[in-house]
Image 1 (cartoon, rainbow, N blue to C red):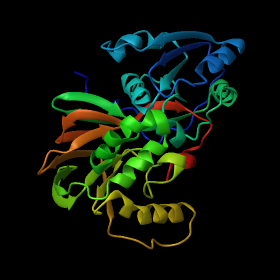
Image 2 (tube, rainbow, N blue to C red):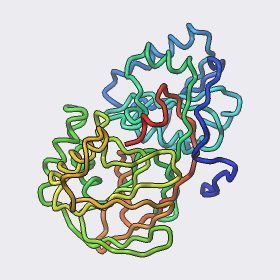
Image 3 (cartoon, rainbow, N blue to C red):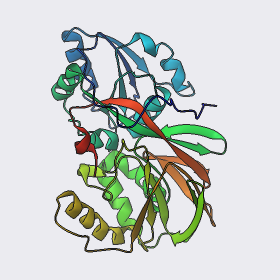
Image 4 (cartoon, one colour):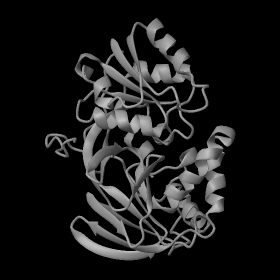
Length: 324
């Protein structure tokens, strides 16, 4: 079981850092991610041509992620190539090791890479890698039935997890549109009473889901809601009160308006947001769970806590670029 103790010397406002082109690069890749058209081989070729010493390790079933990172301290940079689940697993295993990590987009949606404003083509990614600029951001840690793991983007229970479940059989054929198609199917999602403990305070609400967000952008960098920062030492907890996912579209419009400074919200009532460093989520009816796009067999309840400044992500983006 992993320790939940964060490094007390690390703060969420650590400034961006830069370093010279990494000499030794460790690449952890998931061969099952995406549709097989990843630009990873071209990217690694460019790194080697630029003078980097690249070590590749392929993820295998039933091998703990920590085994691939046992010698991480001897590398200058780390690459996690796969979907969001792969990136989160690697980031969590490497937390507080201070080795900069590139979230290489080799999955279907690649929301973490989108939130970090990363390109998708090999030459541009290689240039960002070689420039060496990084941002220190928070991670989430989730505990379900005594087992702990990490997430970069968000953890959720309810309608969002159901949407991901329904999209699984469509992803190979439709790619990222599978999520949109699945959301449109959620016209009458299950509603229940959620029991929350937020930083020690208890509250209840009736709705279709709870999302515990660290990063705040969905596909195409559309903000899920406003005022989400991955480096403020807090989650933004989103209480989904709408009758279905389609009714959340007006809230998405409000979030875009806020991002563009177009004035006060027009719509309200479908969502409520609160901030939390720790949260427990339970429900009157057991609800499915997802974190960073990976559906899990476990159901509510779950606990989550923020790990401030736990990872340095390689990106050309500045802090303001990754906030909603």
